[in-house]
Image (tube, rainbow, N blue to C red; front, side, top):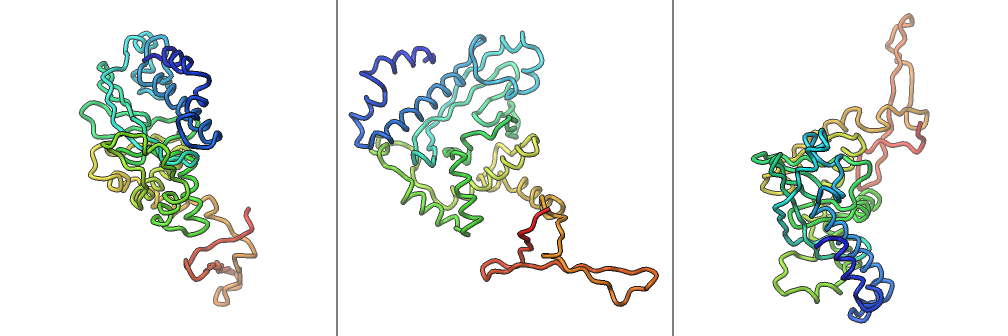
Length: 298
């Protein structure tokens, strides 16, 4: 369905779409209005991306492989087709768990299948993620699950500031953020779950952290396409990042001041060649041990 036709159908509803939904969902008007805006934005985005044409497509050239960027006339001849869709659950902070479908498209000229967040070349085994000016709003955390960026940030802040475990992050989401207004309206054979578990939380945390790290460095991120699990898919890149952060990867790796460091003259050094030694303090709080830190930054 073309976006203009979809807008006509939405416009033909009695009154505003939010008023139409308000009479059919037992929810406060504010929630219904937010749901309507959320779904409309997702639908229009999905239509414009999943049915591109030579004259109207929101799949920017910066998201396409270099072969599609080089010659504009060639790009107009290469329409994406052969759509494949499967049901997903979008875990969001504002609306809870939302049902949806993820659609990918195929280009016969470059033998590449394009997904919402990455592309995979024909017979290749690597997912190459798009480089953009801003972090994507939806993070593909596993085959059937997406998570909004604001929810990813919430989980990260809960873990960093309150030492919340992955299990408790899932429990808090399922008991305090999850809304069951949509679940009852879905078919009984809907294939994806609306409940977060600990594995989903850790997939979200690690996937978002890697995406954020590569986005900040504006580097091309690649992951194995055929992997037994999301954890195995992320393992190699996580090990590379850990090795980099263990060296000079930390932003304040070379910080030193009179508060967190003590400098003194080595009594065993020669007067002609004095040698100074430095002692760094380590803050311990009874839960985590050995975290050098200082409240005074450069």
